[in-house]
Length: 199
Image (cartoon, rainbow, N blue to C red; front, side, top):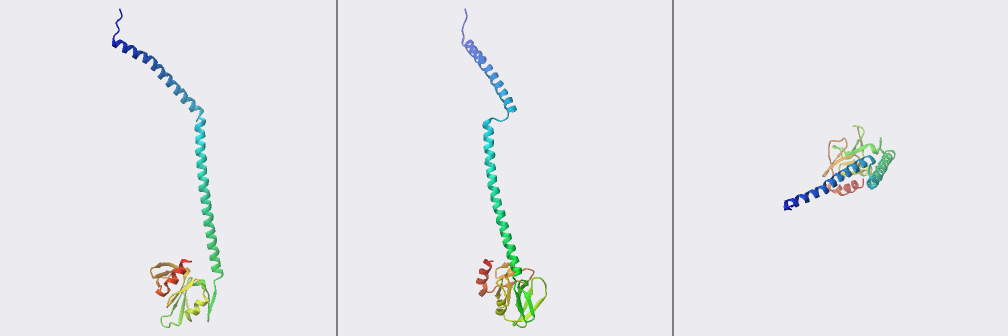
């Protein structure tokens, strides 16, 4: 007579489960192994290729937008450079020839004009391209009448070429290649700030 015990029932259940699970696991491993080899040799699936293509198209679109933006910036900078070159050529070519007694010179060569220390009726011309000076008897108003809009009287003793300004520090300004500072008087400050803002 066969005796059925709890342990034998459990043992049989585990045997049945093992008979089902082990082949299933083996078959599953074989399936994924074969699938992996198949995909390795075949390459990506159609869905994966479609997704990769969509991503590349999006990146290409972004690069085109950036390229268009950079092209626009380059075109803008080129236009600015051309305008500056044109303006510079006009300034050089249309620079006025001013005439004071025996002194004749182009206004764009003037760095600044100052009153002579010993005689305020004498005005001394200082140049941008050489250390020489010229002196004439004249009033600042008469000199300014012959100069273009790039010149301004900033105090009782100085007319400066605004294009030659190198640095502005409070009420003082410095011109290119000139060590000494020039004082902007209180009466000329508002006009000076307005003219500088338009340059």
